[in-house]
Length: 114
Length: 112
Image (cartoon, rainbow over all chains, first blue to last red; front, side, top):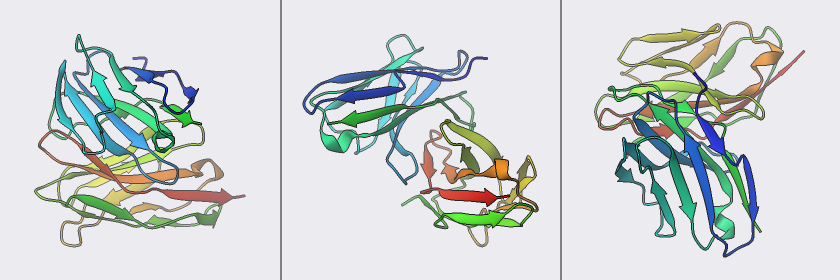
């Protein structure tokens, strides 16, 4: 069990550029979640997949954000036309498909938009 | 709406002191409750959880009891160590699809 991995760990970009982050969940986990965490705050839910289906999106996820999980394994989160307010830690988590199952978190991708 | 409120930090204690970090919640239905810990430079790690009222979660000397009557899940440890210095997050999840709501975190500093 290698845990949840995320790539890259850090990303610096200029305002207006597009960025894409990748998450590889624990292999047997069919649920995958994206969260955003700003400094001094707890993670905020962005979106959730069960296998390849995106089942829920937060209102925090503007139309500049898109997430995919094409084969029900890894997932990507893309931010288009980045803004300085997008600067945050983006966390991925995965879990089994069981009621109230524990979520296991990756190390996160820290994004800085200049 | 569903939410978690936890005490603001930072909390600074001397080694071997008693720790309490307060957490209260608001939820529709019957949530599960969690404490996650984030050590410097690392990702969130599950510390303990409780899935129904009166359950006690425990791990590494930390304990928390799910109190439905007071909607609380306070974290306690009898004797903290320097290595416990971290940020602690209280969280709840709802049955529907296991979405998590996190508190804002409480930073704990333990001095030798």
